Length: 73
Image (cartoon, rainbow, N blue to C red; front, side):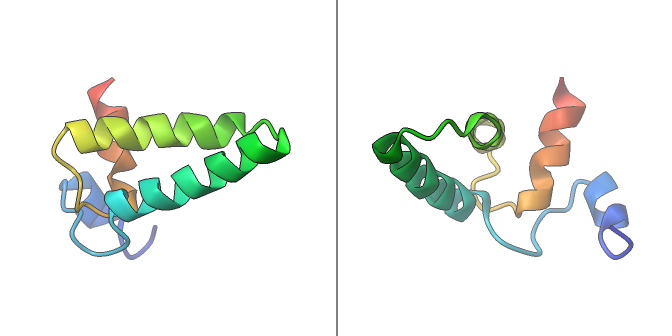
C-alpha cells in the first residue's frame, strides 16, 4: 500500500496482474472446489467483484482496481 496508494486513489491500474487473469485463476479454484464439495464463499464473492470491475471496462486493470468497484457502491 505504501507504494500504490497514490495510483489507486488516482484510478491508475496499469501496474500489475490483470483482472482477466485473476478471474481465470479464480475460476480454476472455484471449479476445483465444486468438484471437491468445498464452499469457497469469499472466493466466489471476490470473483463477483472482479466481474463488476470487468463490466466497468477494467479487463486489463490490475487487481488493485477493486478499489474502483468499492468506490462505485
